[in-house]
Image (cartoon, rainbow, N blue to C red; front, top):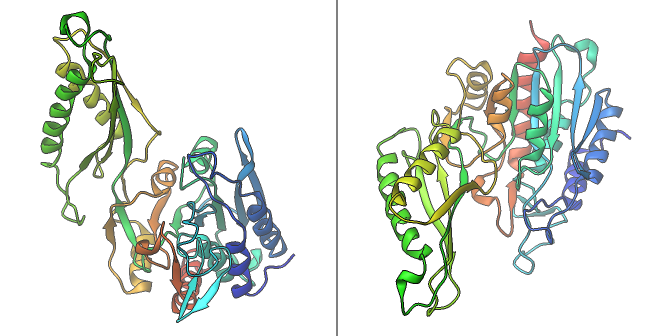
Length: 382
């Protein structure tokens, strides 16, 4: 089934719910959308693979390749969205609606539109025209677990030299972003009657020490700086704490959740080792037990190499210099595959993850023109 005109293509993508969420009551699959795009791309001459996620047959990535070789260009987007706020939208979130020069719909900016625009940019290309392959990739579960991107790194595919991830950047190349870890500290003590503190071990008392240690660590982390970022230092946010069950009982357990957003050059593994050492030091002279654990595997910080051709080309084609952002993307996973990667797409991150998400209609044609020029430079020319 050939891809329909761009406006219809975008409307069909928006109309298919593909929410991914860590909350099972909101989580959905993406196979209808993946199969629809696979049909469009196969009709256009692409060789398409659908790669189901392990243990989730209703979720899949796709890799669509036009041409041959390993020195080509990837245009990558995630197929899922976040949940929507029912009742807060002015338009149906699953109906692409034009209003005041904007196209409203869930995923319009973040980031189903990019997949449609990538297909439009490749329209009418044939393998015989390509000196290097063009690869269009769609991933699952970027908004929750990053399991789609993690599957690609385990498979070691796709192979290419360049990658554009079409997250909303207002068509300005992004060559750097912070990482994100969401961590927990769990302290276990022993309950007892509050009239005699010696009969128990109070986990809340221990957590008080740990909080002080984490606040000190946060101040030390702020000594690391990268002025390319609006917030030029790593951040550590104390987000959630719970423990105990009654005021007249010695607290037997307490758990803290926080997030940590490191700068490029700081590894999550090293930071997690430092966390454990600091908690261990804070509780060393107590009889409390503790464990530190990751609430999800995390996303490493990302920085493309200064000489990355795709970054410099998009700066030239867009007329905008590369910049850094605080939000995470799938870029570190492509970088792990040895692919020079940039984040570049239409729409604004300010519109993502909130009611009445939209993309400017004028951005559609501009995006297609830039992508076609990029394909010409990296896949067609010598």
